[in-house]
Length: 176
Image (cartoon, rainbow, N blue to C red; front, side, top):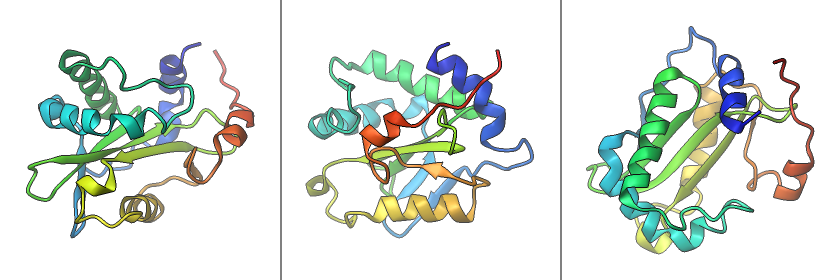
C-alpha cells in the first residue's frame, strides 16, 4: 500500500466532515492560506532559496533536489486537490502583502498508531525573513491546531519527536 493510498484511507479520520476547514490564519507577521497552483512562481523561489535547509529537514529525502518549475506546479496541484478533497491540508506561509512566500505547513493524516495527524513545516532561512522571529511559525501552528482544529494528538516528527523514535513507532492498522 502506498503512502497516497494510506493517506486516502485515513482521510475520513483526519477531520470530521462537519468541520469547516480554515481558509487562512493571519498574524501580525504572516498569513497562512491554502497553497494553490497560482503560487507556483513564488513557491518555487521559496523552495529553491531554502534548498540547503530543506534537504536536511526530512531524513532520507533529497527534496528539492532536481525540482523545476513544472514539477513544482504538479506538486502544488496535488496539494491543492488534496485540500479540496479534505485528505490533507497544505498551507503556504506568505508575507502579509502577498509579495513573497516564506514557507509551508503540511497537515497529513497520521500513519502512526498514537497520533491523528502529522504536521510538518518549513520556512526560508531566518536571514531571509528578518521580520519573523525564529519559532513564531511553530508556536502559531501549534496554538492554531490546539485551539481551532479537532485534532486530539497531532505529531510533529523531527521537531517534538526525534526521527529515530518516530520511525520506530508502530503504524496504525488499516483494513483493506
